[in-house]
Length: 557
Image (cartoon, rainbow, N blue to C red; front, side):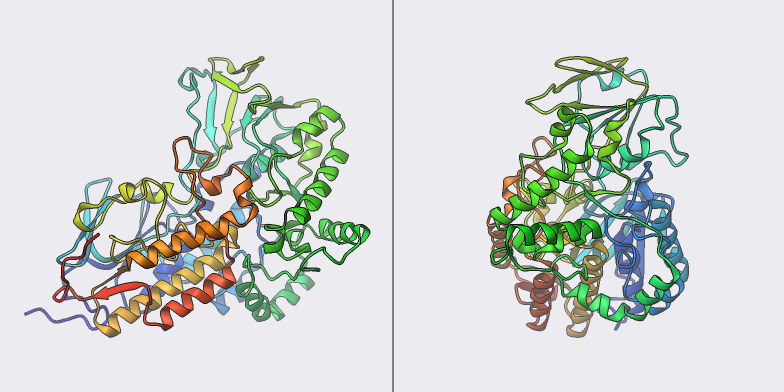
């Protein structure tokens, strides 16, 4: 009779590996490291030919992180922290990719990563409490734990414009930019989208292309990032205070170690409010959002409108042409109700150039009718282009998970379960799919926070959960129906009580036609969420059902 593997609780040889992790970005690398340190046999599958995840795929001109570099990194390793030094306040894509390659080398992670291997499907075997994972090349591997680290923003969305196949030039999505780059010099370039990516692309490309035409459906509130090189003295101070910085970040709503000047503006004069906002405007980045307590900014309409109008005035002051300025001023949603973009290179002044044009393609402007052989035709005009770029974002939060055909208990497919929107407990697991963990999955704080800290919190929770199962001899874990229902309801209730509900955004899947309009991140803050997860674990994984295959009765869905 086979011996039991005391590290994992599985029967030796019953599965090919203990855990399969999908993706080799921030999530997959740390998950591999944690489980391997515990003694588990782990295999990571990555469809790219290198590590990096988001920062492997997004190589478009101007790609840069909107979290400050000294906190957009791992906090778990003193050695890595001591050896790595960021060059700028906000790191560019090549530097982040270099950092993740450095981590992979330092921790010797590549030997357990299979590159250029795409996971196509995963099927749960209830009798054995195992997953069978099938790759696009036909290989199958069995595992006890199936863990997705595929990212929240990794499945590109391309609008279904009529005539795209007829376009005689080249077209690209920013998230699938060619490794070798694209020479835009002397080209007539059109870019669709003015979210965070579009703003970066426009800032970088304006003045390079012969002419840049920006097709904007919705203007955004871009706050100056105030990027600059990090000097030796500044980095020395960061290193000396890193423990405090990380502690403050972990206890913060957004996972960022920034204090707010005031909780609310209730007791302040108009002059004091403007002085506070101006000071934070000069600091730049997400420090501006912390002029007042961020949760209050996102739930108090009066305060939010004051901040929104402050930004509108700043935009108008930068753009020479009044008509263009008004087209760039957001009026249809509160500040922060959509992902707040950063302005790294004077985005708004780009529109003062003669070789940059803004086209309003909203319903009240001139919507795009079709792509032609020569370019783009709107309801009002035709725009001749050599290159068309889609900065149209992603099928966010769920797209990359649902791109895999995942089948749980009783043949239930995840796509079927989430047909009306994702249903999870803590954003970590979903009922009917035992031993499937989703790192920064839907209904976790994820995209509303500094992502590496959210990733670390999830990875460490999953690692501790697996250790608990092994100590207790459990074969499987999944949420109870009541816990999942309550978590979904709490997430929706919180979102409805905040200003998120006043914007059509990818937070709600409203950028993808036909996708259920459900608010997907948990909006209660990383600090509150961390406390909830810690309490659940302390209470022997309250809200989860754990068990052994030899004791399991039939579970009703």
